[in-house]
Length: 364
Image (cartoon, rainbow, N blue to C red; front, side, top):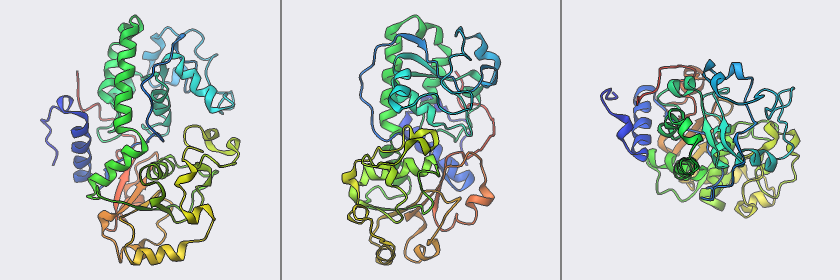
């Protein structure tokens, strides 16, 4: 069982992630996973012309606690980045990103779950994520383990100093960027999953999600698909072809996608398609034969809460550690989502402790 006397704040991030992941598995029988970004980001810091981004998630008084009311942000509700109907006020991804790039701080908070794509978008655009105290002090221990939680806490504590010191602003942005590239890209998340399941030498993979489409958005399955493609390239086979909107050469209409497809759609180079994908060949029968012959080093289910198609067949030829099942839901539903499959595959869950608020596991 976990050692409650460990001083987590002194453990290097790479060791801490593995330690927490193994602790979570000991307690719950599954590993944590986090949202991820499609690629690494460069080290250039854009010029800033405003302190706070006008993109404000929700109304100020619902931001998690009243502490945000003390932030001196003029007309915060009148300048938020969302239209009154709840949809994005931005027409394209570039203008959305530019709003963060020109801002020192980007406000963010818990959304459906603690892990939120907005956290990544802020950091990816060299903007400092600013959480309220409620969020920072209550992120569950095994949730968002790949994020720089220690730095987030420092930022909240040192906000006034950061406001008054451009060098300090750049220092925090650089630290966030380094952590981002090391732990929060799709490739980094794939590497984490492979390492902790004993598949670090894997040379290829099979990805399964027969529900994926531009109109059905599950961030974990999409981000993991993109990460697998970036990691294995053509050596990541896709069993069902609902993924066309994730390639750069797609002509899919972003306006019909959740969040207009910002940050996840049309990110994978088309040269990473398999020959079957390029020619839109129904390859299921060949893939089933490949499974029988154990052609794939690892098999990944994008979202086990809505599909485990072929799982009984696959388990005839693959060990549980060679089959990865992802659950990116906002809520912890262990009995419904995980229990039926825990002996057949290795489960990774985005919100392993759901909406519990146990307090941060390190204090400063």
